[in-house]
Image (tube, rainbow, N blue to C red; front, top):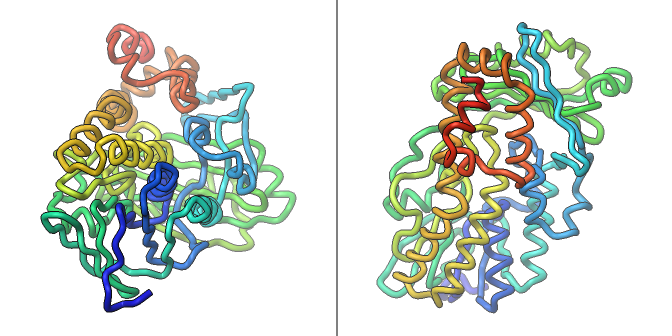
Length: 383
């Protein structure tokens, strides 16, 4: 690739996570020329619990089974110190455990096979929107594209360059990849668990992988200062004390979308860059995959016309994601900001609430449908 000459594409996708790869794949399949720029060499570690929910797994190809380390039909939800413990079970798996390095690499290679030009170890230095194209300058060359899809995560430099404000709400999270002796691993690896009352305005989790545990904690208070201490306390409370090896990682989770339309001129935001994360579960892979596909569909249907693409993309987001996120914030507020109401609601209707959220994560129900019938929310909450 000649670094002195611009390389011209229909669409440049910045970031090879689930959102970027799903967009690139769909665009290539619809006949567009696409370049996918990834700052790291694949596979690369990505801080994430790695639990792919059933609703997200539906958006993946059958090849995704090759990177699933384990799958679980049951999930436990506990409120520590209260005696309230719930388990939900479904005939089909609720969550598929992966390592994001493997999942993202598979998705990128799948896009590459479909005709996407994948450029790894490519750091984007500047994105500049012109009247008829977007110019991208990287440490591996200069590119031009009619549109750019920003899939470069929560700290998206592309969104910043295009004029979007910062994400309005971020949740700090800490995750440890923990290796145990065989007998201890067998004890804690039977079922994924989510534990409340471990930290203010948040929860902790244990995700069993093939040979280790992903254990983490998050708070919806952005300035939570004690994640390390709280996670250490959580491990002791569970009895996870004989740790052989630990890999520690911290990250931020967006809990609300960026303000304004998520298409500006020739730039579209997807996934974490757009802030499209479920505020109840703090899970983002589902909406990352879906938003990437919606962005690709808008570009194809709008025939790369700026006004048409913007209108179609925003309308699709509203129909499939944004309305759902607004409804979810009502339940999230109860879960994380009003612990006394939450605990009372779970004492009255805990299993019913867990079953409802489970139906949401399988794609069989939605927060918005429940919100359309306000009485159903109040019944779920025991109010």
